[in-house]
Length: 141
Image (cartoon, rainbow, N blue to C red; front, side, top):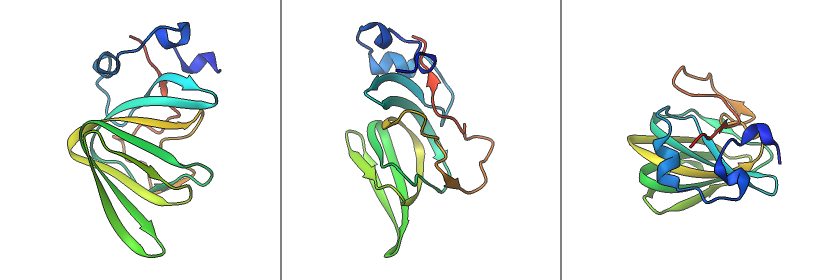
């Protein structure tokens, strides 16, 4: 476990309340690492508006919508489509798939990704100012 990634009670074997974790920060598109599972980060984030088109070449990306509604645009050989995820839904974007998350009315999501995975993937369009290109921030609750 990389201790610089986690500054939370999860690192000490204590439960983390996801609502409290989400209430501890306001930044959008800026995930916080709540714990690790083997070599994977469990991250929570608040999102609103659009992210950017990007690709994770070597890993799938798992989304769980904790609140609100998330849209994920997907581009593949069969064309472009959008998946809509209401609260309580999960979806996995397969590795190598170009995708663009968005939340017109805001959403709270949980992500499960290998530690060190960038929020903007391995290949992406220009990163707008409102997107935090990060591998996750430590959670302080």
